Length: 62
Image (cartoon, rainbow, N blue to C red; front, side, top):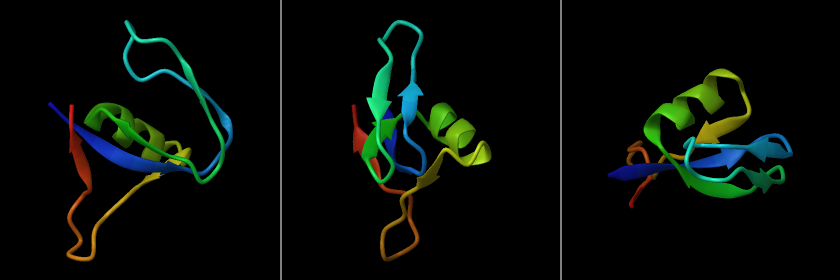
């Protein structure tokens, strides 16, 4: 499974997967999250998805 790298735009406590614990972040922090959670964060403007120089989404194998 690939996770997407996002940069958080707000401080807060979030939970990606139900079976994982919640985590705290500060504005500007990067984190790998599931694609569906990345989309949700982007829609809510809580984070922005990170792209490389070729405009590809930056991912991490999980």
